[in-house]
Image (cartoon, rainbow, N blue to C red; front, side, top):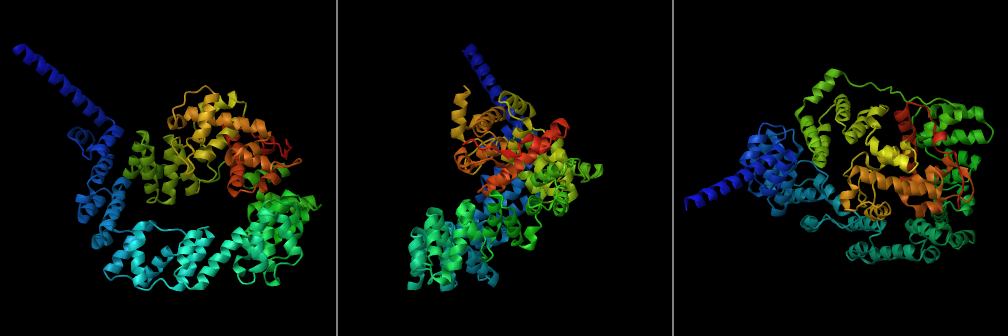
Length: 626
């Protein structure tokens, strides 16, 4: 029996030792310690002993208290926030508590804890609390009406506030009409119809007219446009998208009432310009009312068709502020050159060439000027850098990043930046670069004014896997780096709203198909957040687009907008690259292509310290491959 007891004690001892070693393992790794506390809601003795003197201890306190917020009084929570002012995790407990207080209708405590926020739900709770406590003001009334009139349904948590607004007669017919207009603008027809029930017949008539303008634009333009002039441009735009010839015929044959004719021309011209329809030329040469979209697309349209005098006339119709933008300065200069006035263009080209950007490089190429990529901005002093280095809030961000808790680290970093001066932010960018925290280095350098410090803004991140893929797929390393920077800003774990993942922002479906082609083991999202595998998959896909379209500008556009769209945009005959890029229909894709190809120039300089020009990296002429 004693032998059995002795064996039993040994087994128990071994088990206790194993448990203690597991606890100590969790305690010694912060990420494991945090997961333990976040899961259990309790800081055990081993974790406390290891981490109580660490700058990261408040993160554990936040995880523990986040699980028992209902038991913490407002006063105690304020004391906790004041005790640990450098932790965003502690600061965020305020917002979690406010949601609980709002749901529970603890109005006094809610207002005590409330701070200014962009959260619609919390602002609904705030105004509801002030109304219930009879503290509401005219400013609260205006804010509540602004929230109610948004064109989409608001969170259910705002319903009690909206009920109080009805009781106080804040929702007048004018307010309802405003919300109907906003709902229609966002294509929320069902919401608009529901709102119209609160009004007399006029409200329903407006909604029905909008529906007709959307679904049967030709019928609306010929029958209802005089009665609802505010809907004419929208109806004409929709008709021009579906049946441009019919839209032009209605205008030409004067089947649209004269009172609505100019707005119908405006809506038709806008859509046909965006669609680069050659039949729009006559409309775009007409004198039309100023319109922010049409005025810009009039220029792009004539750029696409290289109508140089029309380009100059279109630029002249822009506002004085717009005409000074670098893009239009470049095109005005090029148009002057093409109509035989190169001397008049020189000053404009020289000014544009000072910018290390897409248009700056194009202008420098025209003038045969060297690029100047050496930084002119001045970094902060060593004393400033060292002072920022020892800040507690910066140390917390650094330690979270080093431990792989990148989402928490980025939140802490953004929280900290809001507390720094511009010089201190510059110092923070330098520190992030020292730690190889490339995303924070790049974005912080830009925000703080170190815009031409390319070591910080264009770091040589993930260089080895990029080099391997560039060599394997025979694509330029600098181009691949520019794509990665534009896609993810070096964040390997980032996910886009559309679901794209990782450094090269690969969609899971594309990733799965490409991994199969590459004989790569597919483990779902885990594969796409692996930097090397993500780069390999993205590079393979990019190389395929280059093979398909034959030009890096088209391949870059295909990477962003999809090859099916770029197939539609591919020119029928050869055209200058700058003109093709300027007339890409999607603003996001147009800016993306410009950003990537300009980044390619900078990355080529960073990798080689050479002087390859944009015209060397991407052929200035796009040849059709249709």
